[in-house]
Picture 1 (cartoon, rainbow, N blue to C red):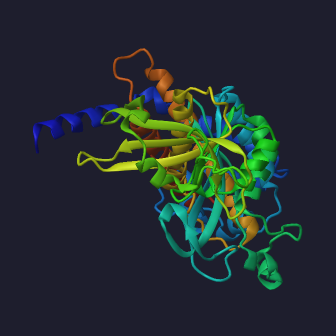
Picture 2 (cartoon, helix red, strand yellow; picture 1 turned 180 degrees about the horizontal axis):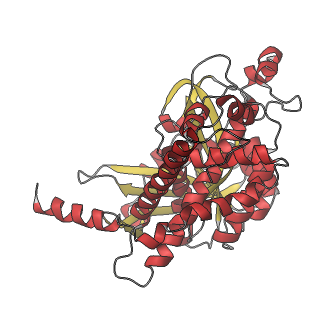
Amino acid sequence: MERRFKVRKREILKEAEVKPQVSQGMLKRLKKFSEPFVASLRRSEPREHARVYIAGLLSDLERKNVESIAYRHDQERVNLQRFIGSATWEHQLLLEELARQVGSELGEDDGVIVFDPSGHEKCGNDSVGVQRQWLGRLGKVDNGQVAIYMGYASRKEHALVDMRLYLPKDWAKDKARRKKCGVPKQIRYQTRHELALDMLKNNGRYLPHAWIAGDDEMGRSSRFRRDLRALGERYLLAVPSNTNIRDMEVEPPAYGGHGQPPKRPFQRVDLWRDSLDKNAWARIDVRDGEKGPLVLEVVKRRVVARTERSYRDVTEELLVVTRSLDENGKMKYDYYLSNAPVETPLKELARVVKAEHRVEDCLKRAKSEAGLSDYEVRTWAGWYHHQTLSLIATWFLICETRRGKKIYSGTDSTPSSHYAGYAVATRVRSQISRLADALCEAKKQTPRVGSFSPL
């Protein structure tokens, strides 16, 4: 192994070390953490099931579904299945509590709310919302479900706070499948953008923010951008590279003296980008990355965009961002439209771009560390119940990571955010798993009497 790799290996291992006081009392904190979330569950039995399920999502299980969680914590599988799959408890109350906590702990006046669709690869015709469709994060068309997630990002941290299952038109119209999967009668077909607006209406008030951000699936809809303007929201939304734009900062064609004066022509944004002079680009140092400073090159223009067949002459700010992907000079280009004032600094727009990408990290963290995609439920209620508890479990990991950073503050060996989060998640799984082993062993030696909670 080359010396530079050995040095980096030692650095990574050092960053991943967790002081004993970081995990000391963690299980007691998990029990206290769960209390405001389970408070809306009226009876003790569902409260216990919620605690068990959150603990299972935080454990060392390879697949974090009902059956494996019940087995790991020596619970009755049927009872836990009923709690997740068909019990009538209101998940929105738990999500409101989650949004309140995230807003209180991470909130900043210039925070960013981010909407991001994410696919879950699933099979079967009887699972709610499953059909062949574009699964963006997987980068392919396949059988699966698509959910729209609402995340929040500030300088302090980033977290997921809400989600909606996208129900395709075929599903929304199929009464037999709706009944079989328990889709509520009041649920009608909604576009992914309407689902995002619904989340903004319900829980956006708990999240101090100055921006709405999202990927190109969210930004391609001119109606969504219009609705955000009507709500008084300021947005920076990605758009596809084939978006047609009219550059309002160039002179229109000369007037020939007959008919209407000619307008500036529409042009694909990627072709327009290629025509720019090198001096049009500005360099911005966004942050220190794992491999050194992350430098973006950006250009900003006032444009009229045609993202659909019809368009209105609404002037927006176009932001083109490029960065180098490798040492061979391969570049990545991203395109954004915004209703921000023309005097908005480039560095502020770059900060929002960075926040939008942070929610991708949130989804990866929830899927890899809290079983976000590990469910094996078919019903509407089951999907929402699993997703809600997974977001809550992920929030606990974030809280523990932030607590660990405070313990390290003032020392010379503060772990990086990435490795600190991984190390804390590993320690959480280890502690919960050891406790589950001990309790299961105790139950083998003790007659079963009443309910039992591993927390």
